[in-house]
Image (cartoon, rainbow, N blue to C red; front, top):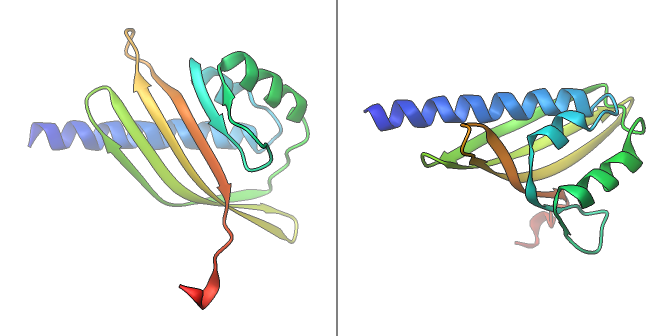
Length: 136
């Protein structure tokens, strides 16, 4: 029972951290995500051909996007956190609304608790939702 309560607390914290970072990102500011990311972060983005490795690469990429993202509202859909004591995987779908446009995303992030009890992102994978339709 104690372990389940602990996992619920971790899940609530991870989702809260992610929502806070999203809300800041939606106004063109990557600082919250950069602060959440660990130095050895690995990052996959559908706009890039290859993954990025390390906070320096992620910072350079995010700095190019600073001020360019403007999301009116978002929906984090069905977030799930699978956690152990020091590691947590967050998966969710995201709808981002910009005026009349909606962008649909899949996201997986791996968080690791560090030696000073902070949860940091060590792996992010964003992909665009492109359903195959009825073919499957």
